[in-house]
Length: 150
Image 1 (cartoon, rainbow, N blue to C red):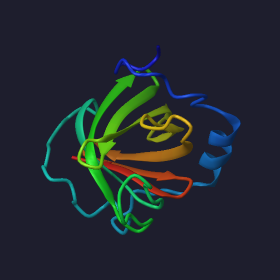
Image 2 (image 1 turned 120 degrees about the horizontal axis):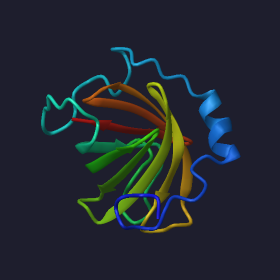
Image 3 (image 1 turned 60 degrees about the vertical axis):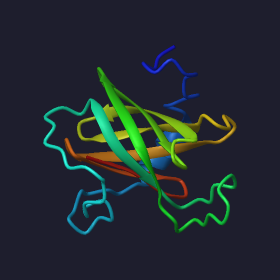
């Protein structure tokens, strides 16, 4: 097991589809990015990446949530762990009833990897992100955003 959370690992976090997707993503950390606006429920002055975060994603409808739409933000909590050049993020949504795991390789401030829905492991998607600081990670998956804030 690679991840520190005791759940099944993300399949092929550096697969060809992940690398191809990451090559198309342009994140610049600008103040106009949708993740620049503070939306997390608590502010933080953390000096490391490891620890508690808030999470949100959009761009896809969760069929398990009645009336969900792709435009709606799904909010949750996240725990991020840095190990060498990899990050692992265990996050939830739907008031903690659904969980996902993200594993990504780090190259400077940029990351690329894969997300797996732990409620339905057949759902995996490439993800690319940018560390803007210790309180903001801008992220994109194949159908929308997957961001983290503190």
